[in-house]
Image (cartoon, rainbow, N blue to C red; front, side, top):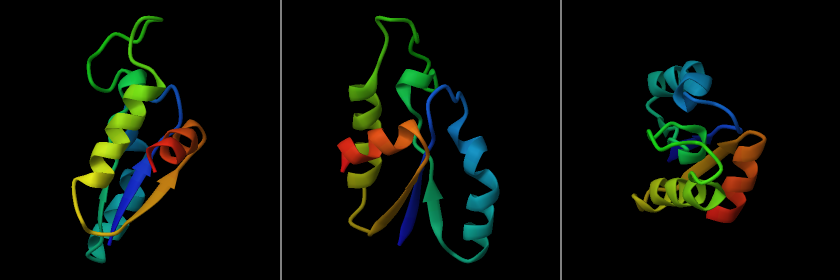
Length: 88
């Protein structure tokens, strides 16, 4: 099993939000990942009105979820819950 963390809006470094929990999980042999959300500027794309939005964020999370056949538990916060619901 692996854990996928999806942060809320307006966060530039999603991994930072989850790193303490990810470290505790890693100590117990549980893999985790926090995908970069394009709308938050984590992929280097401009974050203006013409920049990436919900659809790009959904695609980023969906890519992580489908990259492995291993079961995943998703932990989402705020806007991340919207992204995750659509990605699932």
